[in-house]
Image (cartoon, rainbow, N blue to C red):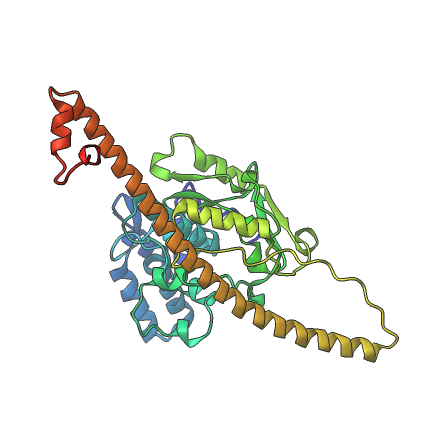
Length: 385
């Protein structure tokens, strides 16, 4: 699928014969049962259930699997209308290239709900769940939830050291880096498009996060197909005809190092967006000095030294992580107190400003100065003598 343009919604309606062949049905059957619902062509789930049951009775495994797969596409991966598998899901099913659309729908839906500050995520929720869980620690603290905390509370309590950033099983060596005139990857979803920034995902492939990302690599693309007055969808479709990739030779050595400038950028972004961290986040990694080259007389001596350094590295890494968590907690508590004090000072300034405004209004009234002094219950300092 590396060179294939993903689903964009501008494709022509598939031929009846094409759908029939994929589902092991007769062309006349497909033609008779394609109906319109919500202005979209598609197949009812009643019809597909009926065909699945028939193929099961006939022990026709390939035909049964095809119907089941289409139902999964229409009801789980790309749900839209109740009891209906629409033409968009059928298109993607026939293309066998669902991953870009799934990623686009997930990003688009989360972004839309974030802007609206309400609603549910309209994408494949089980897939999103599996992705989140795959990056969570395997400790009982995260695999169980005895306190019945919300997902937001559980996720925001994580530190960078808790997250499983890199999984070799998902590393294919080559990643799509940008498309066409865009410096990132504009994704095409069912309902619209949104940008995906590979420069922010390199940590998941084991590559270092070296510097603050340049704004040019974070171009903002977001639109709805029904409100696309500037023709963004056409631009994105054209861009996918020119795909640029990067491999190990271009992305650098896999070190997993997170440099200070990148970490600081993440912290600033979190503050700007207002992410609800339980404790503030701090710089958790800096660029280590490069070690000097070492020479050894024998291979055995070299292997022994490598083993010693590996054990020493693991020991210091464990101590570092413990100290980092403790420092995070202490610094977080200090910043929380500083924040509370700052908020209190701001409230006092606002109160004094409000009192001054009221005093000014009273002074402008006839006998205002005497009336203002009368507002105080006790003796005023000016009149104590």
